Amino acid sequence: MSAQWNRFLELMGEMVDLAHMTALAGWDQQVMMPSRGAEERGRQIATLERYIHKLLTGREFGDLLSALEEEVEAKGTPYESREASLIRKARREFDKAVRLPEQLVSEMAQAESLAFNAWVEAKSKADFRLFEPHLSRLVELQKAKAEALGYKDTPYDALLDNYEPGMTSKDLEELFSELRAELTPLVAQIARSRSTKEHLADNPLRQYYAEKGQMDLCRKILDILGFDGNKGRMDKSAHPFTTQIGRHDIRLTIRTRTNDLASAVFCTLHEGGHALYEQGLPDTFKRTFLGQGASLGVHESQSRLWENVIGRSRLFWQHFLPVAREIFPSQLAGVGIDRIYKAVNLVEPSLVRVDADEVTYNLHIIMRYEIERALLEGELAVADLPAVWWEKMEKYLGIKPANDAEGVLQDVHWAQGYFGYFPTYTLGSVFSVQLWQAACRKEADLAVRLEKGDFSVVREWLNKEVHAWGASLTMQELALKVTGKKLTIKPYIKYLKNKYSKLYDLAL
Image (cartoon, rainbow, N blue to C red; front, side, top):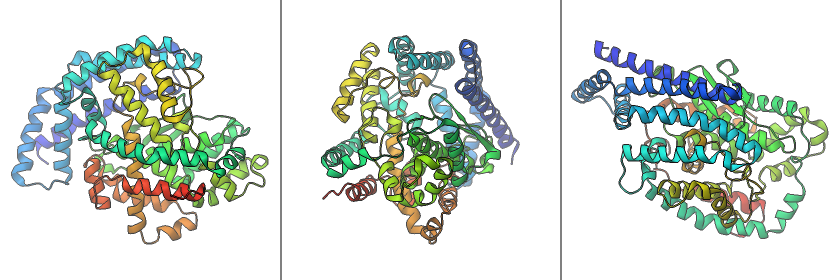
């Protein structure tokens, strides 16, 4: 490589190093840091973010980027090559960063750090008022960010594009409209089904399960998935998450509830899917902007595939139930595959998004999307958020939270400044089924290996078809390459209807 390329990669590597240290500071804040450390941690993270911003928007990096763009174009470097992809990704990051004032970047980092600790306290006390001033500040900063980035129709588009490049609110409205039309009658039919009462009354997962046993079981789940413990670790936190501290340091957190084994199991499958994506990225992308997921929607496709398509399948529990019974022999004694399969696929409107079943889950996302847009467009005041939350929960799910902890405070995303993020959960759910069907078509021995309990076949296929691209391609480009079609909702709807019509004896 030329001296220009080497310097370009060196600067990019320094930015990635600083970003990983920022991630480490954030992981520590959520897992180990004493609560009184919040203010100092906020300044520390703000300092790191400010230096990353300086490097990214500096004249040297900008000049190198322009020169290398010309070189790549002159040579006719293939679109999907490492070099062309690096330049394309760097240009996107540079163009966004130069629009954001350094002071705004620093203020957002510090405000988010303070807001996180306020959220933890507010949730523990079920008191939104403790978090309200922090959220108000974050909303104002996000509005300023959207204005700086620029948008055509709504400030929401400027923020959504940070997580799902190229996606707009118009795209989401079309997707959500079709989802509402398909899911609302499906939920109603399941609620009226005679099988529903039988499923609700017979759930072996809702009894006492000791926390230590749950943690042991969750580690076994990660083993089944193929998570490399020498390149990562699992801990507990108030809200589960996965983060990359380095190419060979991927950390995930989970949470447990002693009266509900399903919560920890599916949380582990979800975060494990994220972690496998991070561990599956090529070493050739190390210390570059390509060494991350393609988008948040693609990242969620990995977690939702393992959590739902695999984790809620009969096949998975045929092999996993005996493992769980070894740790919890008395609770699972006499529990057969039919009973556990119904339990893990129970459809019941829930207050908490992360515990939601496959059918009602997207209603949680639609609700949050509507609230976020209203906040950013000035149609909803932060002080009115709890009341609006209750109204929408009743509208979409027919239930109301008993307190703020079950309602508006349940998710950590806003405390971390993640506005425009929630739709990626639905995009990921839709894409997960599209990917799964492609895997079933393309991988000749997939069914045979799964029957034998060898789930590594799924991980290996995803490594080859999805993870190997890192951030080189957008979701739509990846969907077209891997599945032959751009993102489409039809396979997802068909999957839900086929599965749940059989489970609940529905005539669809």
